[in-house]
Image (cartoon, rainbow, N blue to C red; front, side, top):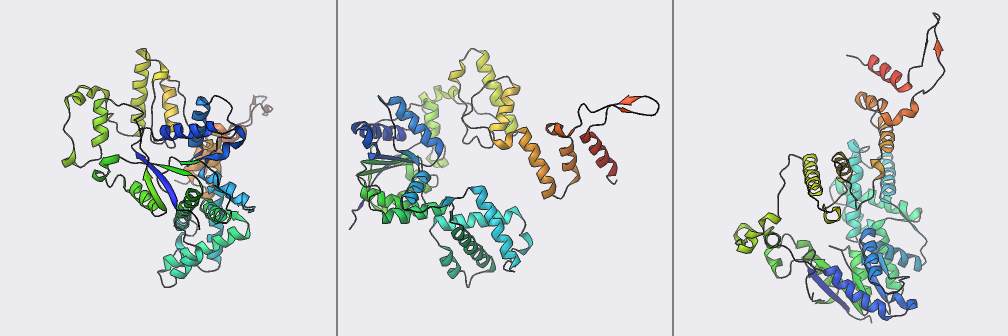
Length: 445
């Protein structure tokens, strides 16, 4: 009979030192064992960037070489479990998954199975809807068979989604493929059958997550039963959580889900990792409170109000320009560039625009985000050409493509001079310019 699950929970606000405290404990156990026994520890993160940051932090404080610190994403750990279980499958990317879903939708349409979604068969919205529905069902560990059985007497919408789900699962099985959610389900089955996985591990740290899927929770349950300690960090607000129930509802749901796995105990955080000015500390405590619960402003907080400034802007572009203007002013006042940090909740949507704005202001900057391939001018131009066919050659987009300077390779550069009968010569008209003239000339008024 397996041991009861033993899970330590470290719940604290952002920036309070949760990761630092876990790193300190992790380093202690990592340093205690010889190099060949470093697999006694395991650190699971949600993203590759978080795993790289933890590896860098361990390397900076290490006195010797760290050949295998045991830090990996949860998905990478699941892939290792699936491989050790003898399953030789390929995990599809999100783009490949959408292509498979388009294929499934087309097959169902040919079979006459899509009456409810018949008018939107070729739309991206249907692909998004089916993708999100299947992902949600898999995260809740609802199989295609169970969903089809439950949908027999349901509305047409649910029945058709159930049929698409079953077709999609069959396509994955026939091609020996797994998607992201299926990977964790396969790892769950593999780790339950392999009794040696997780055995002998001194400490497992699960850091940076806000919630877990059903399969992930079951994997954590097995690991907590086999490892000596399992530490999970969650974002919370300590004793003030009951006053901000809506904000930390996900944390509470995750805590309840972990409590169902076995015994949970709090991990005490010895000290905070940072000290905020009084005004910012007051803002952090009261930002999401109801009006009736807001604390009065203390004299110390009032004195440090100049440490917090609000930017009023008419839009995203104007906001970025205001930020660039303030950074430029700081640089001109002699503030070292290394002392200036601009943070966003996510750089995914603003990184390219922010690069352009900072370039316009002459502000050199390092971005903690790779430049997206789709942001390359040539790639954008090629995507514009591809969209011409997908959108049935609309007039305005056709003019945009023809006038795109990134497609200068289509021009006839340095061609032979063409001579007319009167002896005058001229260079041939560039292909794009000639095409633009023809398109504009052919456009009906």
